[in-house]
Amino acid sequence: MDGSLHTVTTMPTARAPGCPFDPPKELIEAREHGPISRFPFPDGHQGWLVTGYDLVRAALADPRFSSRRELMRHHPLADLGDIEVPPAPPGEFLLMDDPQHSRYRKPLVGKFTVRRMRLLTERVEQVTAEHLDAMEKAGTTADLVTAFAKPIPAVIICELLGVPYEDRGSFQENIDKFLGGEVGDEELIAAYTATQQYLAELVAAKRANPTDDVLSDLLDGDLTDEELRGVALILLAAGFDTTANMLALGTFALLRNPAQLEALRADPALADGAVEELLRYLSVAKSFMRTALEDVELGGQTIKAGTTVILSYATANRDPERFADPQVLDLGRRDGGHLAFGHGIHQCLGQQLARVELRVALPALLNRFPTLRLAVPADEIALRPETADIYGVKSLPVAWDA
Image (cartoon, rainbow, N blue to C red; front, top):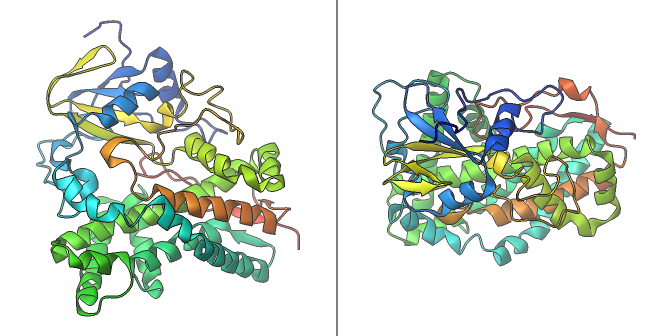
């Protein structure tokens, strides 16, 4: 190894005061030293932290870097000891490589195309209007997370998967627990187990009485009930949690950048670009890990077989070698190509659905409430911890004039 190479000794978990949208400053500083740094994991494993755009993208596209869960034996925040990490449960394809990954993903690709998701636009508009109506009727204040950001994607993903909407409360709560980074292991396992049990019952119900939804469509294939349950879990969690956090955190970011907010309100044609810029700027899916299956050259360094690398989406999307003035939120930005949805075979399956929901819901909110503002000082907004899989706000109190 190059003795002059930068080393990040501990994974940063705190954002700078007053900068809730920027990655932890130590990560930004690591990228300033170069696109790849040494990272000694808490258990002593000598790994790597990749912070530059080009190298993160290259690693995501390289099949020699594995997503298999059983190879993720090292945690960036804790020493796991000699614990044996089992393979991903059947159907949970995000934590698998090909050919297993493609076996689960391929039947889903046609159900999440750009065209199909755009056909959902009218339904997303209806759901958004219903929740804005409810906010308006309830008064002049709301917690935007519970009144707007969570229920809109929850309705849509429930309808797509055929989940009874009246069941949304329990699964939302459980998904928050196992993705939110704030509960202990025992509570996390209980939430995951409860979600698995619910999905097992849902799959059985679809077998008995198929309906017009994605989960029922998958019954025609060769997936077992256990596999269907795993696929449903991935779709439910990803289709709900990421978009919910983007809606709330995106609104927070716009309220803190009033000139950008007014530009979007004044010109609805900015919506597509605004969504892409918010996705880049916020990068709510902050990082993912990969393990080298063989020796791989990356950024002039040899990543030895069996070595774990952390790929920082948050810093890749703020890389000044890829984006001009990357720390600035600029809804008119033209240098696109962010990695907020990843890249390669694991690129987010539901990205087009998320785009439709964001393009519809954010402008609708701003137009319905022209005087929308934070109801508490910005530094009092409760944020998810860096230990959460998906970054965001826990609550977002807002107010508007009657």
